[in-house]
Length: 163
Image 1 (cartoon, one colour):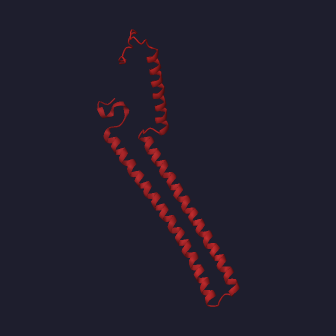
Image 2 (cartoon, helix red, strand yellow):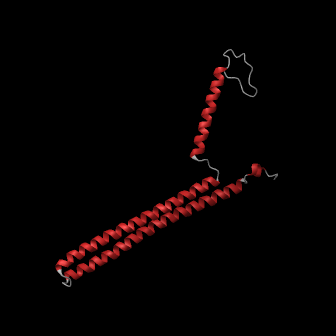
Image 3 (spheres, helix red, strand yellow):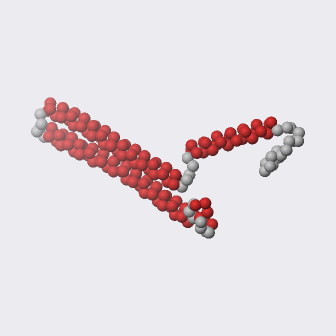
């Protein structure tokens, strides 16, 4: 066992703890930046696919305007292109949403992992502790209620008398 007081009970020194906390904070920042970049990338992809289909629609319109395409077929083709544009935009938005959700889940998992490494209690741990405190409080109240009211009972060693 080390004579260094910072290493008592098998935990690291304060400097080790601070270094680990700093590393975890840096990783969390990097993960948040990755989430941001994924969202921007998904938006750019949706915009580029939308732009490409928009250009196709514009070209079809030029052909109709120049008389290169039959008038009756132009309306059908424009309708088809509009539907294609809507479908492509829907797919791009869905992919962007999936990428965003995936990055969010990954970030959340990293935060939970960091909290576990730092031994930060979970909500369940705190709820269990609260329930245990409630049970002990109830048990203490019952034992005090059962003690004689005149105080003639022997005092419990190590427990101060109630006033």
